[in-house]
Length: 240
Image 1 (cartoon, rainbow, N blue to C red):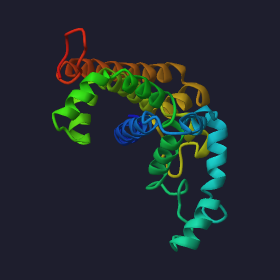
Image 2: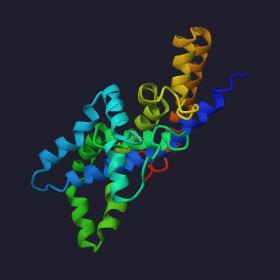
Image 3: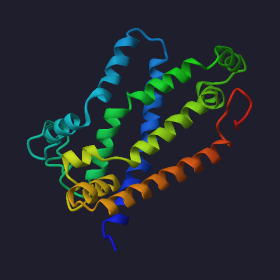
Image 4: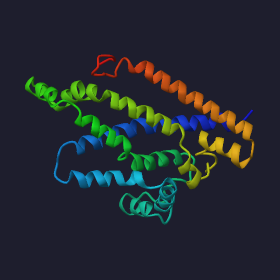
């Protein structure tokens, strides 16, 4: 009977399905860049990591100003360079979730996932890469058949954390739009918060929270079940 339940769940899954793969690929790409041993790597690592240290509330306030439809610097630049004026980032229900995804990618790609990927890449045995190079493997073949299997536990770990974090998206929508416009960013966690702490329906809010827990648990168990086919562990178990 709750008209907001299924739409909020759908928006949350839409956000997670887009955000998690893009976030993983972006974090892995940055980690690969930092793993090249180029000059100034420490500076780049710091610059990539800094956005993830910004508190979510401050991040939301800054991006509300940057993406303001008429006076925001981003829209002013788009209007001057590309002729795209008054783009409704947070003010239209069809663009608000993609805007949140872009914001989240900027804030998280260089964060913990990138550091974990970098540690995984540095743990790939150089002997395997050298052997593949001697056999004539190109960079893509070496990456696909040597690097990816060796860092597959790291990919799996970041995948699980990314899914859990994406399904709990709350603070940015709460501060920036309060679920609007027209419930366009009314995510599931926001529904839980409003039911429990705004409308003071604690029992229903707790029930919604338990449903989210069950969903996260089921998705995690499914990931563990399928991980046997593609996650390679040097100890012997797992797929390749």
